[in-house]
Length: 347
Length: 216
Image (cartoon, rainbow over all chains, first blue to last red; front, side):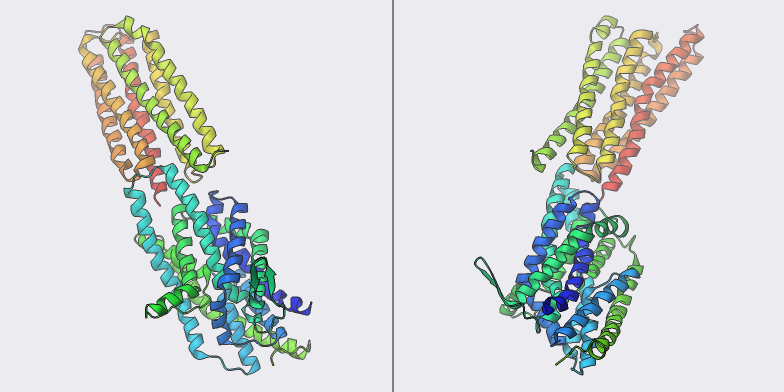
């Protein structure tokens, strides 16, 4: 029971991820009525959970290497600090990243507990924050040009384009949900993996390890976030933030999902290793910032008009402010948890 | 329950049918006007029902398109524009019927010296409408070509305007028509014929905006 109580902060973080980040996947599709909300919510819930349970270990190891939160109360505070930071940043309408806040919160725990912060891991993580929106923009430019070429030259009837876009939005949305689950579950549940005592679970022929059970719970929390709150966020995303066509929205979701996927895929890592190529670090990256990167990529592919460069500034601000806030909140909250609520926050 | 593939195909077919009917209406109109101008009044009256049948068919298909566009939830982004274009195009079909009826009822006296101009005006004005229909087809299939047709619509509209003015000048400066009322009557019919191209130009503007909105 105590275990459940302490992971509640992680579940809250999962809920907010479901409410906010998942909305990026189907925002335009739902607000333009290309896909029904119920269909979108069901697809996200299923695939985000599959991604979390079966693809989430790679990024979790990286976060674990940054800081090994070894007491349940400490993990609770770290996740809570990250959740509060996400909430605060959302109030200031910054493209908030759960990733950046959890990293800040973990460093806060490292400082509080006197554990060393692995600088090489930290620099790897920071590098991907900058690299992921850029990569997403590059993918978006390529995919957009391909889509534009097909629409202009292949004489496809408007109704067929509509049909293909609809199917594409569903498939890409499912891929995006899987990637989001695989890449971002570490943010939600990663800090609890060292301390969780949930045990393993047998579902039919599949046996889930302790970590996978934790990720399953995280996936379910994300799903609850999707069903309870993401509809209004999707409509805001579709109508106010990214006023783009359904085809462009398909490109945005595909580009950002591909970025999330390549930074989470252990399969891709082993393929690159076998080919003797440099591997891509498995790091949780921000879905929202990848989306912003992709939208800017489309703007650039269209000739650089209508690109909202202020958004770029906001991303940069987010890189600095989010981890900093999370670090401070985490440090202060750990102090209170240890000295006021008398819980051991590190071993 | 029909699949999205089936619904999409069905609507695509309805719109094709509708555009075919509009083209048919324009052809019937040109044929009948030529008969009238050539003095084949009996033949003109005998086949007047053709345009009524075509106009009824157009209305039926238009109703079906409207219903399907909104109940099938296809092209949510563009359906308002599609409906606007198709409904505006229906005015061309209605105009075919109205003008032929006016010729049949009012029987304007078109003197020999302006028959050729009237024929040319009809031809240029209808060409403008034909280019519009082609432009609408490309809106669905080859968006990048829409502007080419919109430009042609403008060109033929301009030609029709010049012919309309030429007819008016000829009519009001001639001694071959004594009665001023008859002159005004002919002017009215020249304006009615030129209106096909004016209407086509108006719709082509809607089409042009819709095609910009459709760019990905």
